[in-house]
Amino acid sequence: MLEHGGNLTLAAAQYNIPLADWLDLSTGINPNGYPLPEIPPAIWQRLPIEEDGLTEAACAFFGSRAAQPTAGSQAAIQILPRLRPACKVAMPSLMYKEHAYAWQCCGHQISTFTDLDDDILNSADVVLLCNPNNPTATRYPAADLLNLHQQLQNRGGWLVVDEAFMDATPENSIAQHTHLEGLFVLRSLGKFFGLAGARVGFLLASPQWLTKAQEILGPWSLSGPSRFIATQALTDFTWQQNTRLQLSANSMRLAALLSENGLAPKSGTALFQYVPLKEAQVRQQQLAKQGIWVRYFPEASALRFGLPTAEGWAKLEAALKAF
Ligand SMILES: Cc1ncc(COP(=O)(O)O)c(C=O)c1O
Image (cartoon, rainbow, N blue to C red; front, side, top):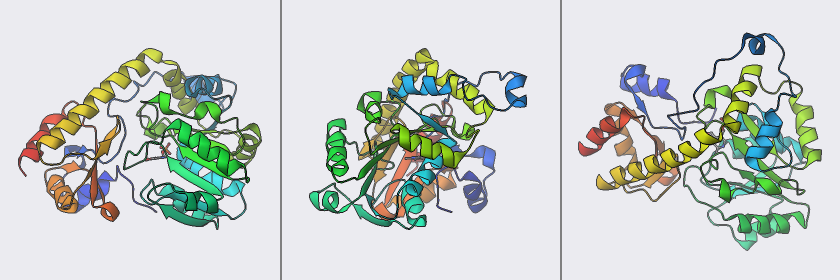
C-alpha cells in the first residue's frame, strides 16, 4: 500500500492526540464539499440505474463527448495499464504515486523525468501527467499537451492526463479532445467537490477504450447513492461558480499566511500549496505536535498544505507563529 494524505488515524496514534482534535491539511480535498442531498430510499434499495443522466451530466460538465463512470479516478488508474501490452511509460518523478504503481504491477517499464524533453518523447509509448500536478502544482498548457499527444499518436503512443485537480480551472482542461485516439483524461469528484468518500471518478477517452474499460469494470461501477449525489453536484452550476471563487480566495489566503511565517509556497492550486524547504520534516513534526497534519514529501523535502476549515485558520496561524 502506498502512503496517502488523510491518514489521520496513524498520525493520531503516533502523536497521541485524539482523532477529533486534529486539523487535517494533509489532502487536497475541499473542506467545504458539495452539500449532501437527501437520498430517496429507492436509490438505496434498487440496483443503480445507468440511464439516470449521470453520464450526460459528466459530459456536459467536462465538455467531452463520452465518459465512463468509475469508483473514483483510482479505478481508472488501475484499468488503463491493462489496456496495453507491456510498454515504456514516462511520467514526472514527483507525482501522485498510484500511477507508477499501477503500470508497474502490469509489467510496464517506467521512466521518470523532471522536465518533458525530446529524449523522453522519442522513447516513451505512453506519457502520463497530472495537470495540475500533485504535489508540485506544475501546469501544462493545453496546446503543449495536444501537441505532445499528436507526436505520440503518430507512432501509436498514448497521452494520459490525470485532471483530478482541474475543476477549479476548467479552461485548462483537454477533456473536450478525448474523442481523439490515444488521448485519455481522468477526472475525480473527490477534490473540488469534496466527495472523496463517494468514490466517483470518470475516464474520458475514445469509444473503443471506454467500451473496453466498461468490460473490465462490469455492471454497476458506481453505487446508486454515489450516482445520485454526483449527478446533482455536476449540474449545480451556482455551487460550482461560488466554489471556484471561494477556493481561489482561500488558497491565496493560505499562501499569504504561509509566506508571512517563513514557509513561502513555490506553487499552488486552488486546493493546496506546495512548500519545498530544507527543514520540511522538522516543520511537519512541529505542526503535528500541535495537532495539524500536513503531507511531507521526503523525496523533495517539501510540504503540501491543504485548505483549512473555517475554524481551522486560527489554529494554523497560532501554530505557524509558534515556530
Ligand atoms: C492526482 C490524483 N489523481 C487521482 C487521485 C485519486 O482520487 P479518487 O480516486 O478519489 O478520484 C488522487 C487522490 O489523491 C490524486 O491526488
